[in-house]
Amino acid sequence: MNMTILDEIKQNKILLADGAWGTFLQAKGLKPGECPELWNITHRKDVLDIAESYLLAGSDIIETNSFGGSIFKLSQYGLGDRVSEINQAAAAISREAAGKKKHVAGSVGPTGKMLLTGDVTEKELYDAFREQAVALEKGGADIIIIETMTAIDEASLAVRAAKENTKCTVIVTMTFTRTPKGEYRTMMGVSPEEMVRSMKEAGAQIIGSNCGNGIEDMTGIVKAIRAADNEIPVIIQANAGLPELIDGKTIFRESPEMMASFVPELIKAGANIIGGCCGTTPEHIREIGRKIGS
Ligand SMILES: [Zn+2]
Image 1 (cartoon, rainbow, N blue to C red):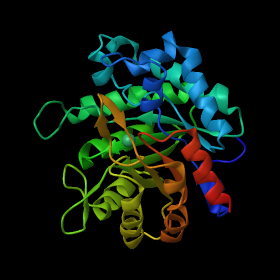
Image 2: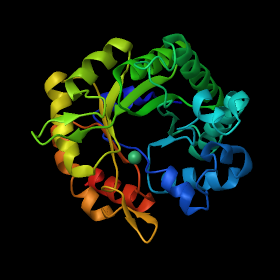
Image 3: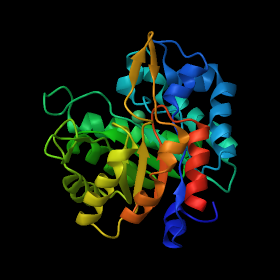
Image 4: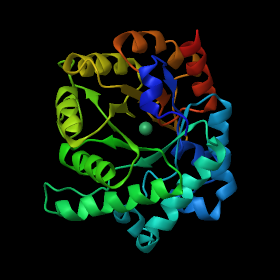
């Protein structure tokens, strides 16, 4: 890589991330109950096609098909002994599409385990995140993105594991919803301010929010992050609205134009990287990119 993502942000560039992978895989035929990450081995071309679609749409950062790639998630499919292979393959696919000029962000999602209930120990969680992050770097990721987090303790361990065992830039995003009082909290009760404090302490270099209700709430979240810290780069990856179940199909209603219309206020509030989450497509990313460039 010529420049790290942090170098590019320092030049006051607003960067374009990519859109959804999970819903894209479903559109390509991933069945309920199938392991999405195994597609890195069994459906390599389809996964590569997703990465390439986002590059064509203008993304500066391409994620990897490894959101559920921890030993805990893969074990649910009897694939717990293939963590390294599957994550390395995920990163190699995105790197093949991205070449040397664009960034590959290795996706790390929640393990589904809770420290709170004694389900798992801190060491077990840390080791799981380390194993995944190391494999993603080995496959070609220059960034690790820990995303859709709701618990501070799990997110902190993930950030530390990535920071202490790879040379990658570490991004962390948490998922918030708006309370009736108009505040933002994760499912575990974390505020944006608490996220900033704890994630910086753990070593995160870029902080933000992903998934959730839709792009409209993201401006308030960016403002809350910026009120807590005026320096740290901020990433926003919103869903294309709330998922709705229609005729047994999950639909996301926010159009590319609708989502892109929020880009100027997100940038004004202090966002440095903008992309999409569930339900967003290359068309959404292209429109968001157009607005960033305008
Ligand atoms: Zn999402």
